[in-house]
Length: 270
View 1 (cartoon, rainbow, N blue to C red):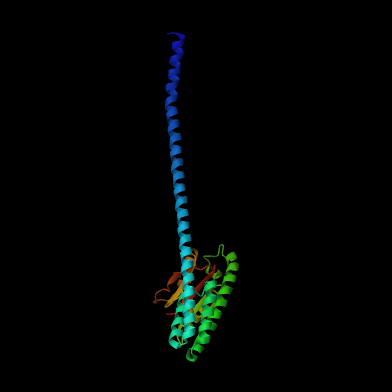
View 2 (cartoon, one colour):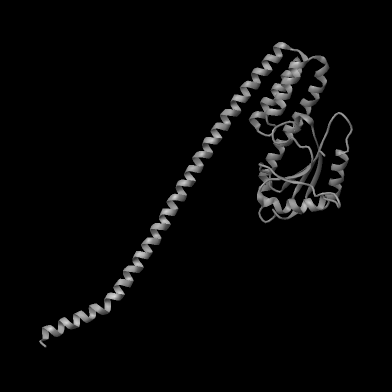
């Protein structure tokens, strides 16, 4: 065999040795590329879905704002008509609409709500005026309470880290439903407050006026514990256990959309 043939044979042998390794390398490279393309595709799809969700949420928010704005104009027209008419039935019906449709928590709507109710009270027949002025005083007090609560929430948020599951770090408000007739709700709320003294950072008993309870987000007809973020669910259950007595069923829990860390509210209305 010539020298040329020997070199050719050796080259073929080396090629045969490296070919499986090269195939394996190519296979690994293609697999990695496939994984990357799949990951990249998933990321793009997730980004697209997230973007679409944000657009949909923004659209929903815009539509909700527009709907609320239209509602405010309609209520303003209703009040204007009632002021012109001046009869007791019309004023009472318009007052009910204002109290049940305008928020007591949204700052923009609170001012309009109180302004419309004040206008109705000034023009209301004498037999309705005292009750409407009393409701106005309760509305003003509740507005101030919410302003104070929002200011304190900024400070409480700094205390929240590491304390969200610690009941002793929380403030409690015990709201009781009031009305014309004497009811046991205040006494029950005061009893709850006594139970929690020394177990929480602070506890207060507060009246929930009928006009406030008629507003959006309330409508309470039972005794219930309200908490906000899902991270507060555990401590809300601790409060539930503390307030629930055998053999009565446990006090219901209800999650709401507000932002006051280290704060829970109890409503006694049933």
